[in-house]
Length: 193
Image 1 (cartoon, helix red, strand yellow):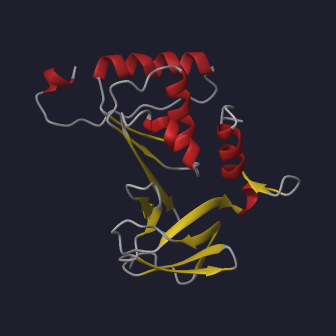
Image 2 (tube, rainbow, N blue to C red; image 1 turned 45 degrees about the vertical axis):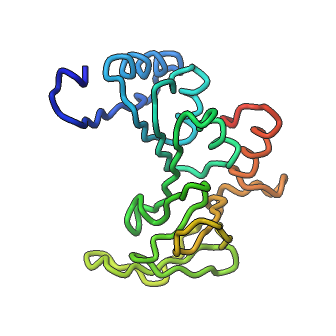
Image 3 (cartoon, rainbow, N blue to C red; image 1 turned 90 degrees about the vertical axis):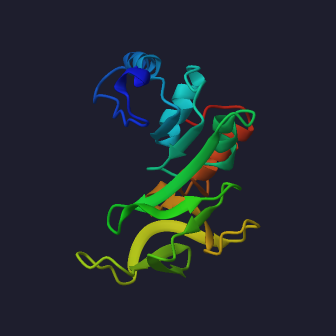
């Protein structure tokens, strides 16, 4: 269908309808993928995994994930055997939406320090916007558990690992949902729990 549009790029918004059964949602995605033959997918990591389980990621060159934390194990599954690039985007609607951080070629998130000053209060990420004049944030407590990490790529911006929101912590297990996902994937189980 893209060939008939006579433009180099198209954005085709598709989402799951509230209350629709999983099988119907996957059938809808299959029809859209077959019709439009997209090469880049932008969605949550859990939807990307569901599409992978259904065998619907063939032909995609890149997957951009966001909206929920994901694990290194899930990114490896989505990458396949080097078949596609997986880029993780981290953001908060309270400060800018997507664009607070983006993953590098190593899969590590790097803060967009051109737009934010970041600090860590314990394990909580705190942001100050630099350019947002309409709704500036000063020392905004994100509620996201994160920690600075090192990365060997050439990106000069601070690398971070985001574990998830404070509410994503499971005290009985001592894990965040993203850490539980990593554990499940490393043992061959579905990360969609």
